[in-house]
Length: 241
Image (cartoon, rainbow, N blue to C red; front, side, top):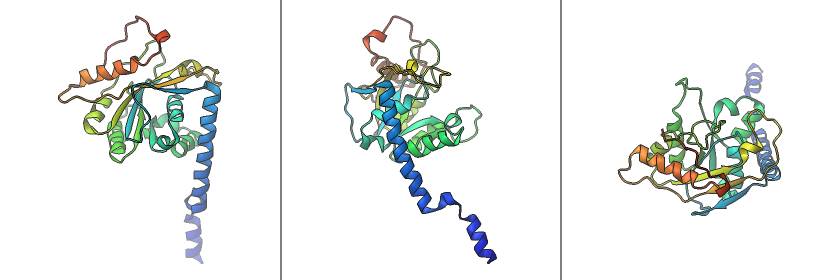
């Protein structure tokens, strides 16, 4: 009887098959609700210029102004690509509560990375490299942090270059997310309904012998070239890191 009781204690509800099936079902429903809410609040539409949605392993690299960026990009992918694509997300934000953890891990199957600069845990670039080598497509933000200031685009980190060099067969698709910063400003809990657009550009390729700075500059230019005409100006756009 003692052994049986111990086994029952160790049989946690979340480990039971029926609990796993229920969790997956809830994740599917939550995903559909999130996609519906994104469409309702932002009227989001995807514009594919220079490329088309393809069932090929892809690294989407986009500008980052809001916690909702990867939600919008993920929502605009066709369902078959959505199922294969994992957003790269900050562990500190998405693991901060049970609800966020469920959305990040179960709904989006996000690749959680540490951003606290402590040096503890896995190297973020290595984590992304391993995910790509495992066959996943990824959504990443090469600025490395949210752009909450007035700059159009922060300097890009070198991680994109290292991934391009380590995984040459992966498509590298630049993306520009338009208007989301105005829909969900920093510190705002209630989104402001505005039309948003996710623009997918022509894939770029790391040229043979191309150095880091040249590649990063090209990647940055590919992102900025996707901005709509009204959003273009003569402000200095900074240099790549």
